[in-house]
Length: 168
Length: 281
Image (cartoon, rainbow over all chains, first blue to last red; front, side, top):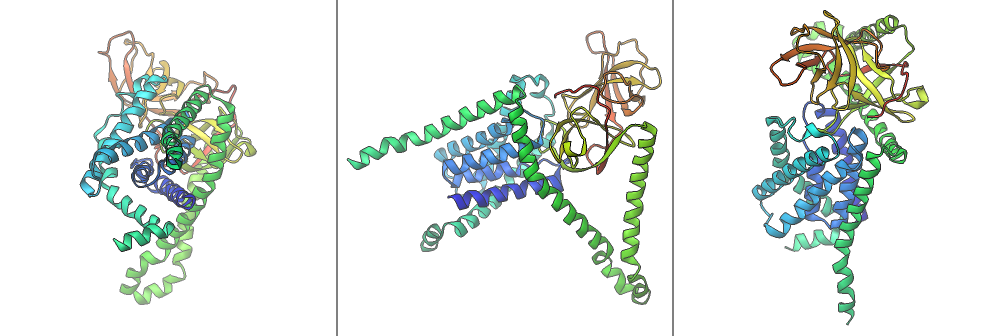
């Protein structure tokens, strides 16, 4: 599990760098959050939490929001993914995309609520732009790709699982 | 028997894990809201650990872009103009370097002019990272405490004010942009000298607050720093008035201001060492 955490942490750092170099400040695709979502569906809770903590702290360090806000946001994604895993079959791309979109939307609304509670009163209804919705949908559309990425990581880091996949 | 002995332990593991993370989270949030210096150091450590990677990638990308612009992109043209191109081949990389140098020189000249106009001690810095959050607007610069940067220092470019330093780490600094919701600056209208507070509104917007409804304001008016408030030097451009609404309830009009600086494509900035007192976000 340690090797998986390390590899996923490097992937998360890579995604963060990619976004900072190519997408910000015009586009805010939620790629690290999507990685957390997929990791929460496929991996043990401890691994998902560790990844959420790392990504959350990294994002908090580069932002002006209270430290812990992005950690909380990432944990909401983990919670949503685990809850969805119990209720739905997430084998096919469409349910994966829909649940990811729901989780990202829930995360967005929760952050707005928390920011409002800690004193940023105008935040809840501000910047509710169609582009934010589009960014959430575009991020969710990438879910199957991230699942493939995680499958690839699993195959490399867990040979026993690779064998079971091959035998199936 | 062995199984029954293990099961409660396993059953408790997940709730304990969740409880542990939730406690950690609230601990972090509570310390953060109290502006704990320890969390500042954690942030500083994380930025100091991850920012060199960004700076290195910036360098590699810049080099590749120069290589692409100077060589690969021109392969097609070379086929069409072989004879001429052969003679130019030797000069093209130099030309690209020259153009790049001219552009850099222009930017630096503009910064130098601003430096002379300001007649203030300034430090030039490069933007190495942008804010990943949708909820705040800030930048990370490649100059920090070791280069004399302190919290409260204003950050400027030739076209106007960028923001102010809110965190200074050993080698990096975090800058709150004037459009961030926590940003406020004492401002004055150039044409009428009407004074107000320029408040960040998120996105790429600000608003000029506390200007009475009878004050003379027109769309296009330039908003400048007033020099009061002790953060920004007097007479620097903050933005242009882009919308006015006098029909809002209350004694003041609603004035939208768009920054004169394109805050999403900054490369080099000047940090003016003039802060009189320190402000926290």
